[in-house]
Length: 335
Image (cartoon, rainbow, N blue to C red):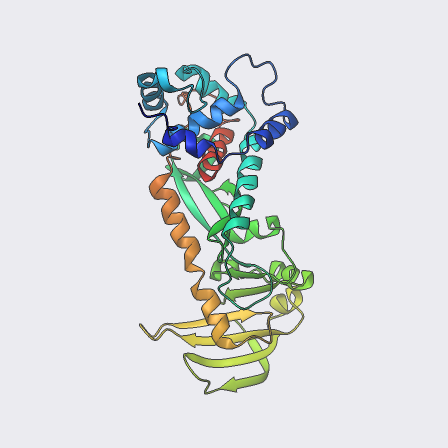
């Protein structure tokens, strides 16, 4: 007779139950609850993600087929579709969000490895849009006949783990999420050209952190020092100031402009950074590693069920609280 734990039970063993219960108590998550607790809900949603369930109905049917085994992994007795749907709608998603950030911090602490010989962490910040059905998620209106949310992610390049996730409506511009980041001194933050918000970039500079952002082709820049004919794929390396009034007002100090060429297709890249000392090749390599956050988004969309596996409410229901279960599902998947 096989006495080993089920695979799901072994995965649950990595979760800090004591920490989770403290978070539940903080938000009164189990107040007036008799049997189906937040912990049961977390394990139920994890089971649905890991078993690739298509909907709540599909999840409940799958759990019913294993009703005699649910106590072994810690899920407890089976739950009805209406009760699970009600729990997803009414319980505070901050419980799962805070626990997800705790688990992410644990993963980062154990997976850290140095790729660059630089002080501080290396982060890539980007966003991805997750499409939703507009008839069900009226609060998530994106276009005329389309709904969606945007997941802004701060990705630890060296640990290969997300460090911070901020969820907004899909119509929110990428740069609007930059103030939500808790910037660390001496860390490097890598951005795509959608983040050419020089006021927020100047905030990073004042904190004592560094940024590398891909500049737009129409950037106006007056160099004070200029290096050309450099080795490798670096075309030019200049230090100077912005010349356009609005840009110079938002970022009044010196910064660096590095121009590189991709050897494979000849694409010309312009980078702006406030790190005036590291080699230009390192700046190009930092931006090249930004691609890891795109691979993370690809993994999210391939493995997490987050488009329709939410609740049991139809188009006639009120949409005020419907964002909470969506966030809870994402953070349960990240945990």
